[in-house]
Length: 309
Image (cartoon, rainbow, N blue to C red):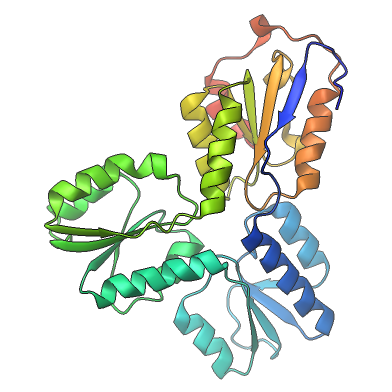
């Protein structure tokens, strides 16, 4: 696409839009809505407001609990649910549509396998994330969830870290951001078993975005501020290009954030619709002002969540 000003170019990463797991979850939810029964979901199908707003407009009912709800269909979000919550819904007579991403399922299975081997399961990720709660709910024994070297050291100091551990990763984590933690862990424990549960499409998307970030003046990451994989992607790109901005939609763009850049790169989270990405490109391309690096705001502007949707 030709930009309004000839000195400005905008390049979209090769891999944007829905990943397989998100596409599958949205499709299964749409199928459930066509049946006509009440359709409920605990939490969001995926972490993208454009997607969830569209599904809820079609009749999807987001609830905190299904107790006292008329019996119907319960969709399991792409991030999964603890086993007891799914069992409770079945016991109450709900039809279950399991939209859990198959890669998340494999992470749950890997955690159970490590537990069966006698390992204390250590999950590298965000303890409050829906995916992690689903993995914890698949285990019989308590696991440790850490997302930093400091958290790992605290677990060691509290004597909650055993000598034989099995490590898995939140599927959307950036492996590059986990290396220090793993390096620390191997010195703390006698035996460390590691199963790389990071989603390969996530790794491919991260590699693609990093390559683009290294070639542009400004990198724009499009996706929800509640999306873990989008936040990880922005953090990873920012570590290679400080001029990295995260937004949810084109409505969040501020002209001063991009008007200065000659070369702009765009990548997206796994649950961001392609149309949303293309709209961001169109807005930036449509800017008639000439690029001028002297106009760019301080790097802190791009790390400020007020400018990230």
